[in-house]
Length: 319
Image (tube, rainbow, N blue to C red; front, side):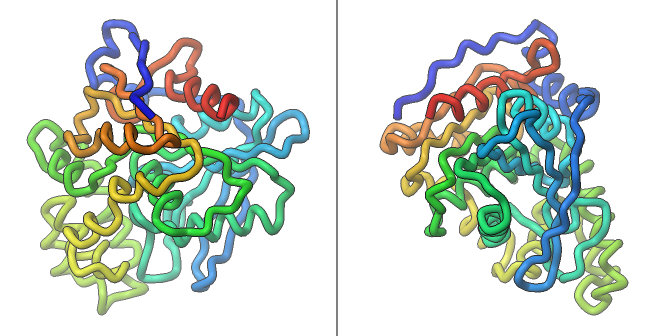
């Protein structure tokens, strides 16, 4: 499909990409969402946690919410989405990836941008144990890449999966990593690295031979983390091999359910390769919106409902 025209025009303060990113990431608060946690045991014996919130009326519609790097099911962009969907006749299932729900997972591996095998298990679990006839995916950043890869990388996508919306997606992981390594994004990169290393420290007593002090000390950048841990724990040769195999960009031509990507032009995490204009033009099921403003998972909106929350609800209701 051709690009979706965008009329998003926030107040002047939020026309700065960094301010939009920081406000929605650190200062936004969402109240009134009641979540019930379910622990899902995965086929390899590990676990992840699902945080459920319900519509006030019985429904057969469900949105699976996928958070970004070092996020969780209580981030405002997740609970804000859940709240709006719950108010409009959708149940919501907020996924906490392995190790992201407040306690370390039990295997050496954790989560990454291309771990579609875990998402496939979640969808299978829901269809086997719940009564939903319509399932939608909404992913943010890493979660957006995960959703798009799941839909296009050869998984058998159940007929109940009707569509997806992906926000601030690093469609090219290598390109996005390069952006995060730039001076402009040094504060974000340091924050991510701090949280990732803290999790490695938590897991170190469980795997002392695999996670050594010298290895941790050698991690200077996010790419180093992917070279030293992510690639080794998930059977990739190195960080570049991981980025190459898990970037959703290459899988977009195969997506066969309506899917909307919203990537702001002022998102400092995204380089040119993260705006799949050609892929969207060639795939009738792929919609691309590139607002001038929004930052990275920002998109401030009135009454504490972000622009992308409104767009996702509209997209799922009309496709």
